Amino acid sequence: VQLQASGGGLVQAGGSLKLSCAASGFTLDDYAIGWFRQAPGKAREGVSCIGGGGGTTYYVDSVKGRFTISRDNVKNTVYLQMTGLKPEDTAVYYCAADSRVIYSMLGVPSSYDHWGQGTQVTVSS
Image 1 (cartoon, one colour):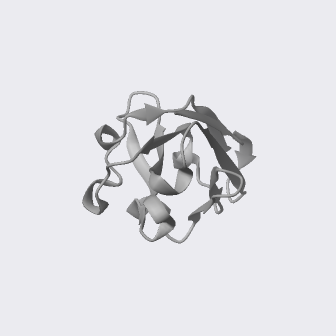
Image 2 (image 1 turned 90 degrees about the horizontal axis):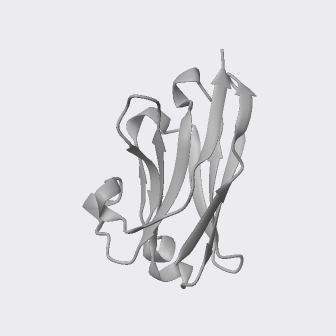
Image 3 (image 1 turned 90 degrees about the vertical axis):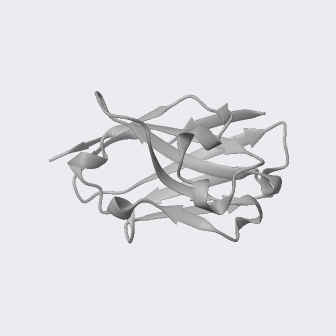
């Protein structure tokens, strides 16, 4: 299982970014995929996650209405479209995968065994 996150960058407040998580070595539809972020001095938190099959999604309250998670099983890629970015969204964003995550645990980092490298998102005020 390999995950490659990309798409981070520097953007002004109110701007948009689209993160991509390219997966290899497994069938994407069989796995829950999560986007997590970690800011300096803070714990890693679940941002948005999508269950195996894509039928269930999770968003942390602070991003609801601004971020959208989606998956393309043909391209084996999960996306996180981020709009209305705020300085408090600044963090390193990671994608993670696991085949055994139940709905209530989608946003919990310890539910995921496989992690990609992070991509930095910086939002300036």
